[in-house]
Length: 559
Image (cartoon, rainbow, N blue to C red; front, side, top):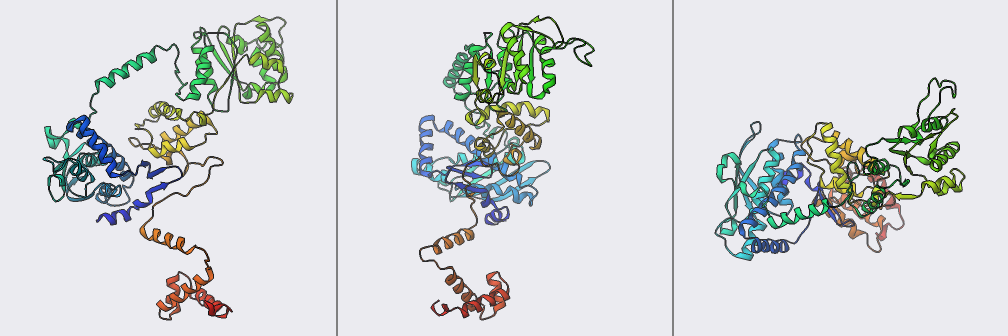
C-alpha cells in the first residue's frame, strides 16, 4: 500500500494539531517540535565535535530509538483497523510526515505469532545524510544514526521485541539512497550495536548527583509519606509546617477541600516527639450535632437513654498523642464552648459525668471555611478562633502548585498499579499536558481519583492517555477561551478554507455569489437541473425554487 494511501486509510493528518495560542503541536498524544533542519544540523555537528563521533553516534541512535518507540505507540493503537502489515507501515509514513525521510519497505519477512522479523528499507531524502554531507563532506561510513535508531525503536516498540536496524548504504557515502537492514538482536549476534542502547556513564555528572543527594540528606526534615511536593508554594507551606513539628503549639490548617489537610496533620504528628503515641482523626462534619460532644469528650454510663456503659471520647483516646479535628467550622455552638474549655484547662468532662479528666493532647485543626467570616455571621466563637489560630498554615490548592503534579502522579501510579496488577510506563505527553492545563477544583483528592480510574482503564504495558483520565476531551478551565483544535485536514479541506477566506473580503455579497454558483452548476450540467442539483448537494426542487427567486428579483439583471 503506497504511503499516501496509508495516510488516508488511517487518517494520520487528523491526528496532527497545531495550537498557535498555546505554542504547542501535537501528534496524537505526543508533543512535537517544528525545528529548522539547519539549526538541528548545527547542534548535531557540535555534538560530534564535542563528544567525538562514537559517543555522538550512540546519543543520536538512542534519541531516534526513543522517537521510534513513541510513534510505535500510535501505530499499535490502530491494530484491528486494518491488516497488520498496513498498520506497521504507519511508521515509515509518520517518519515522512515529520519531515525526516521518505522510507519504502522493499522486503519484509515477518512472523507475527513468533515475533521474528527481517526487513530492508529504502530511504530517500534523509535530512541526516544531507546535514552530515554539508558539514563534513563525503563520509567513509554510514551516518544516518538517528534514522537507524528510529527504525529500531519503532520496530521494537511495535513487536515488543528488540529489533536492530543497520545502514548498509548511505547517501552521504555517495550512494543513490540510504538502505537499512533490520533483524532481531539475536540474529545480529555480537554485531547488533547494543552498545548504543544503554546511556553512557558520565562520571563527573554522577559525582555531582551523589553530592547533591548527600546535601539533601543532611536536611533535618523532608516531605515523606503522602506529603509530596517540590513547587515553591508547597515548599513554603512545608517549611512553615516543619518549624512547628518539634513543639506542642496548636496548628490550624486552612485550605480548599481536597488539598490534603489530613496528610499534613499526619506528617506533623509523625515528625513530633509524639510519633509513638496515637494519632486520632475526627471529621466533625461527618458526625451528627447531637453526637459530636459524646464522640469528642466521651460518655458516662447512664448519661442518657441507651448509654449502657461508659466509653472514652476521642480526646482521651488521643492522650499523649495528636488529635486532628477536620472540618472544624461545622462544630455546634455547645461543642465549641466545651472545646474552648479543653484548650484553656487541658481537662475534659464526659457527657453525664461529675468530674474532669486531665488529658495531654496536641490539637491540630483544619477547615475549608472562612472562620473570620463565620465569626462575623455569628456561627463561630471569636475566642475559640484565637485559641486555634495560634499557628495558622495555609495549604495552597493544586492549581497553584502545578510542578508537583508529575511527582504526585508518579507516587499514585506506584500506589495503584500493583493494586490493579498493571505495569504502566507512565503518562503520554498529551495526558501530562492535560493534567497541567486542568483547573483542579477537587485538588489532590481529585487527582488521586483520576489516576486510580486511569490505572484501571489503561492497558498494561502502554502509557496512560487523555482518554483514560477524562471522559472525552479534558475539561476547559473556567474563563479559558475555547480554541480551535488546530487539526491538519487533507489538502482539499485546506483549499476550501482558503477559498472561503478569499471570498470574505470587503464588499462580499452572499446572494450574488450564490446566484453565480447556481448558474455555473447549470452550465456545467448542460441545463440538466437534476445533475446541477447533484453537483450542488441539494435537491432539484430546491435548485428550481432558488433559480425562480433570482429570476423574479428586480436586481437579477445586475448580477
